[in-house]
Image (cartoon, rainbow, N blue to C red; front, side):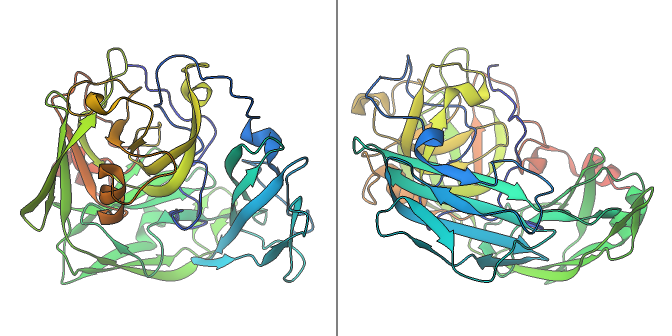
Length: 408
């Protein structure tokens, strides 16, 4: 198996939740598929050289006084979107691109919010007219001896029936029972929901089976002053609610090279696909869409494939695992590939056009999909996806899931 574990990055974009980026072109930082063979040398500069962002990607403990800037030296910014999430609320950071397109600067109140997560999505043209997309994220300083949970899904969202409530803590939790008692997930109509810990830093919640459409789910965080570890106390006191939308489960048959889309028990379509090829087969099992990107960059170096590919404009990309499995549009493979051969580095590809088109199979499926929808892969040559790789907890039997609670 050649899927590489994502290095030094966290799925999602929210402080207290992982927010999906779909309104603006982004960079899905680490992913495991692309065209076979070395990336062509078309003169395009790496996105990191075209678009400079400060604070740096992955920075932690950023202070309130640090500068927030986006620059395109030698190029021209087309779009910039920056979001800050703190205490469960996402706010767009107001800003302006300079007349020459070289700089973006904030126009609102000075200073960064503490205990927040910032995401930066920017698109720019370099001096030769090549388009580059970049997505970065950083977190600001959390007061000493405090801990917070980054959770998903986002407040007031509508999600698919496979959504799993997931919290990632910024510090290891040693008193897991105390923290779990302070986190409640309830549903209307009433549904049994159980907690499961993945190590000391992640706590997930799900019901026995997929949620029923129309269910309203509430995450109640009562972590303020809860002792999670030696000299580490929570700071969050927040309720987050989301709604379960229609049911949509799509089954990818890797051997047949098809994906069958079923909504509310009715088949909508069977689409031709290409899945992971020899040596990099797609995971089997139930995977859940956790992020959506209109356009994204996929670079083999970030997941252990070296310089095998670097595509800066992959359209209609939807994340399925933390380790880099996506379901995305593919414009570079010959049309006859879809439905007949598996050629990717582990992802599932649908036919698309460069730039993305709503009328292609990939564009159609992207428009029909929600964060939280299930994509089940069968008949692949790989093993089953790990329950903690993305929102893949549905692959764990219910009794084993319940046994992962600290309160049993």
